[in-house]
Image 1 (cartoon, rainbow, N blue to C red):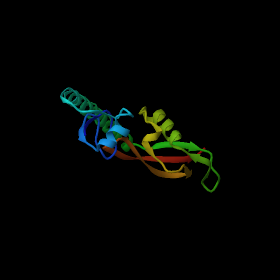
Image 2 (spheres, rainbow, N blue to C red; image 1 turned 135 degrees about the vertical axis):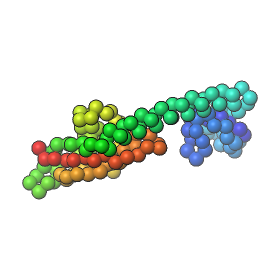
Image 3 (cartoon, rainbow, N blue to C red; image 1 turned 180 degrees about the horizontal axis):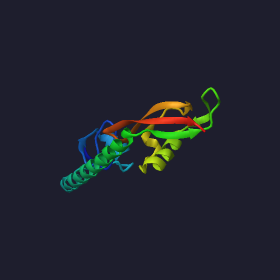
Image 4 (spheres, one colour; image 1 turned 135 degrees about the horizontal axis):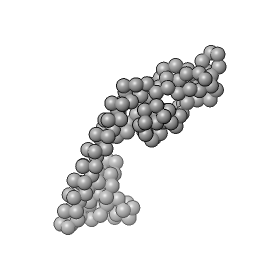
Length: 148
């Protein structure tokens, strides 16, 4: 069955793509969850318009992410936290703490979900945290944790 995707489906395609899928997959999952619609001539023309709009928006988002990368790669972000004499933190520095420090020091707003931080930073020093504001743009942010 030919369907037009209304949103990106992992392993299948992006919004506006016309794809062939198994009849059962379309009837039982894609169409009932509003992820796709059965394709016909009118719907395919509408899908082309959706795809073009998505590509324009995606290009703008990628450019904005590249601008963010230029600002954040150039300068480190400093986070202050309470620490022991040995340099161990009382608690940890989380992604939310890094985002707050980034906004305060550079004026760049990030979402904490953009930072790839498996667990909090627990030591004083310089750390590198990967940021992914866009699927195609990833860059390291240098985070300096200092004792207060």
